[in-house]
Length: 190
Image (cartoon, rainbow, N blue to C red; front, side, top):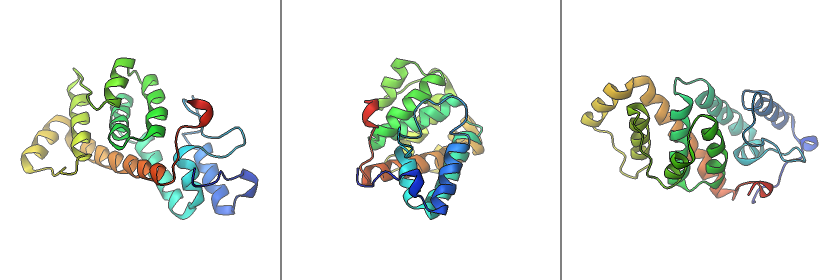
């Protein structure tokens, strides 16, 4: 890892406030599908990167919280979309973390394997449309013309389109941060 773990006792006020929002917010309440902290109290995954730069990390964390907890996406659709980003960006941490969350949201092992391989299909029209749209957004030539937009609007509506565009952008940003700073799956979790 290119960034050192930050000891909670050594944090600045801004870092301490951000850490409290991450751990004390919706991510830290309820069932934990992956650990937010190491045994020493350092944050894991993208949260540790955010903590190093709290001026950017705080709004990024808030956007992530909104994407995860304040959209109208079903849990399955949200995790399908996140796992599509994880597969397209080859993000080991996001794949590891969200496979666990996806399983809790009702995704089966065969669906999780298909998502990891970039070949997911669903009999549910909304799930399939969301997955296909996310895959399109993740391509280098992701232009959405009027015909494609009209089909999307009919199938999933403006709100879901917006939510998926923001979700893909957010998780692509996390994947890039994780890649640049060489943050993988926590050692004890392999």
